[in-house]
Image 1 (cartoon, helix red, strand yellow):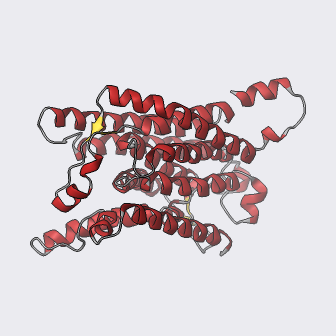
Image 2 (cartoon, one colour; image 1 turned 90 degrees about the vertical axis):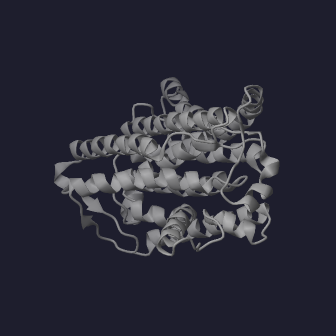
Length: 373
């Protein structure tokens, strides 16, 4: 919105026309919005008695988490408010990738909110914490991923200059390797579904301690703010040997807003948390980062940048597989793995900060790999 107002008012190039500059403004705006609306949202959630009652199959963890009872959840509303306001003020609204990104955030935000609400209402009625069934969430997540994959692929093909040869969506980009591998459309769609749904659920699994998911997501979002700018800018994509994705640089504005929203949310979610993000925030942010990775052709890079989310998801998969194959034995004290360290005696704050540090190191390594080709 402000982008167009400034463009109308001034008749000469200004700093605001630089995408990275506007991404920084979106970051600051989203942070301010999150901090300002946070107290109102928290009071509203308390008034509506939308408080979480963490229940785990491990009694030791239940004892460690008992002080968190009735902490307001669905705080992802704070994050989404910051992202949407920060984005709409500073982005080029007519951009295709931006529109699809906001659609992704809205779709998964509503899905997560429905899941949170059902969990809370079923708990009040004495029916446990049953939200949407796993297959029900997967239907909506996979459906969204298929829609995004089809539209992104078609847009990429239709808007790619024929004289430049094969477009970026017919290739798979590998870290440490300067040439892309040929990628049929069916494989592209399958990868998009796995990446978007997988990342959405992986971030959801990570959201189990005060500040853990928000802090890690802020770090990942910052890396993708830089990557989207580079892949959408001709000279930078050529210099860094990244695939050129025409007009994808505007996605850096949403990534900037995501970083700012996560930082603003941490104002209230840092230990001891005043509010939890719930599925409302975790499903939406995870799916969006997966979408950005698909658009920028950095699906494999996401495994490095979002290594914490990969570790958390793999710990659950390994735990379940080991439990079934050994007739009841456990590989970890509890999965996701952050609870394993908590049960080993690490204070919650130590687990969270060490995971943040690991996320920062993985982010630094992922940026380094861009030049190691």
